[in-house]
Image 1 (cartoon, rainbow, N blue to C red):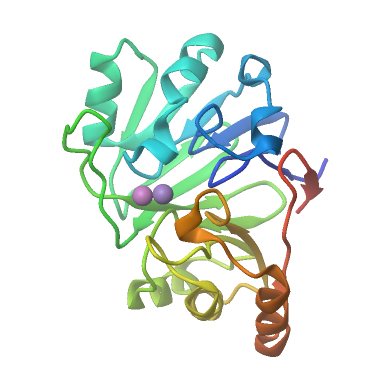
Image 2: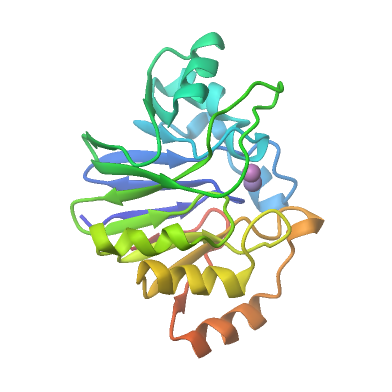
Length: 230
Ligand code: NI
Ligand code: MN
């Protein structure tokens, strides 16, 4: 079975890989878009939850989904401590640069250039991205980040098949920097996230598609709720 990607809006997505479900940056109930409001969060039962940083638009539904599913939450040391205080006991702390073999694949936590305060003002440590060595492909999810030269280190260690990158600008990279990021990590295929949810990050999809075509990058917009094969 090939790895599949289901888009749940904003930067939240569910990978199904090697018979396991891996959820990223759970933020569904607070997403104002009507397609996201149709998603029943009670039906989301992942084996793992990866959290890139502490901002509410990446963690708001993490406690609910972790508690209903028993999923292992993979996140920074500081977010791990915070989740433990909220009663989430199944956590796995990482920090940037580190690798760990999980049952769904091998994960490296990588640098993201952003901030990571938690919703109650607690310190969330450094934000991070993830490289995922899965059974059939290697994925890079940058998390919220600026374009950074550190991305050029990633292909020295990994052969990236697809990159999941924010394109909404204002808080993160815009489409132009995301396309440069794809070139830095040597990914030919990009799935965009972190756009259109709020007024600050609305994008012109047609313009993005033209820019990607000119850059020789396959840009795959996925509708909220839709599942694609990677
Ligand atoms: Ni953020
Ligand atoms: Mn964000």
